[in-house]
Length: 106
Image: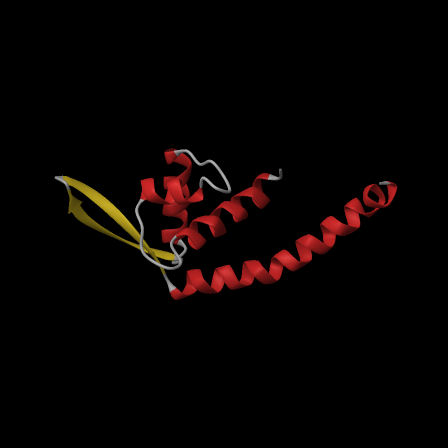
């Protein structure tokens, strides 16, 4: 898969994982397992990129004697999910065009 396309998909997956309530790294990884496997290093790179883009905020709090970061989606992050839904329609259209010959051969 094209790295830029995959990067965009992963970003939206992480935003969707925290859309309804704030979350922390391990829980995000666990929540995403149903659709994709992410390493901690990949997730934290994505989270830093999303924070820098203003798509999520982060707060730190102590949990069982350790510092834990909680991530919350921003209005801009919600907007990005909406944009992705619109963009996805175009991706599906392209997919159908590319695979139409294969589908008609069945």
